[in-house]
Length: 395
Length: 120
Figure (tube, rainbow over the protein chains, first blue to last red):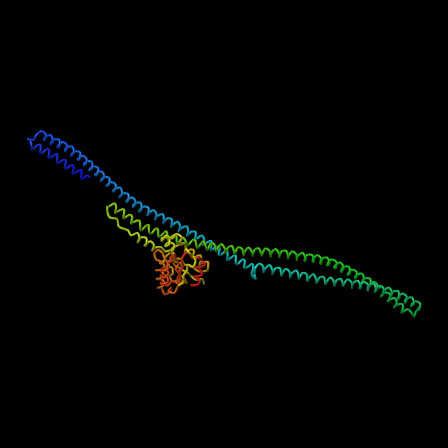
């Protein structure tokens, strides 16, 4: 359009020039021709001016558009620089934050692992103590056996006491027999006294007969008198024997009664002791069984807690995996950050940005992964999980 | 007399888990945080088994085992590689340097004890 306008301007301007040249060169023409030439010159002038104005407007417009375009390009470059600057700064910040998270995770999980390790150690000691306690209680030297042995020994003591009681009953029986013998002796004493009385009477008759015999019976009277004396002494001895035997008998009866009373009391005491021992042994047995049951239960619960802690120790090991994954991210950020810095610098200095092979970059980072789930996630598998079974290979 | 095991890992939590598992079973444990420290900790000590991570700063487990296998005293000391590396290529690398087993973290304490008892 601009070219056509320029052609029209040239044509119009040519007419104007021709009109002026013709007017200056030919002074002899008719007034009509001069008028026509003048009209052509005026029209050409107006047309030229109009076309010139149009071209001028168009040029101004074009110039304005160029300036706008140049400004827009400068703005775009600045924006790209800002994006690169942001990428550089934000990657550094992300790397710093990742390192912070990694350090905090490491420190705290390490502390947690340390605490659980101590708990596990203390628990192992508790289990050992519990096993020893329950073993001591239930073994051949355990509480149950001690109680059983004690019961046996106490029963042996009761048996010994009963045997002693039986021996005493036998002695009592013998004492009872002695009492009967004493009664017999008492009767014999009475008999002696009776015989002495009869002898005395006989001696008295002998003395009477001796007196009647006169001188011839004098010697016999002396004998009769001696017999009477012996008879009297025998009677007195018989009486003392009877008296003494009655005293012995009374003492025996007294002893027998007291001993029988003691025997009854002892029997009651032994019976009572038997019951007490039985109750005490029963209580000890029940307490022992409770203690043994408690110790076994404690042992089982401790073992269950230990298994749970083993699971916790497995979970704590994931800190190592998390730390490695964060480490890989951090390393890649640190590697990418200088690249953006270089791009930004190139743009500022108007240099060409160094090209990057994104496929190679991604492949390189994939090579740094150590876990299978990292590789799977890199390839877009979001379901990848860590397997902890059959994770050992022997060579 | 209890047997001694060297555990080499840069992760404190892994070292603690391994240590408590082994000490609970009656083993003595020596800890190191990287391959170089692991070699230094040996220092002529009688060690019945070495458990080592693969990726560690300063010196990794593969390089450490290579060096240890050059030492006459520890040439036949069994080694378990304990790592998050699960690729078959890495396992074969472990086999090539003379490791007896390749265990992938996380491990169950009873699995660790079975392997240790088998190799000591």
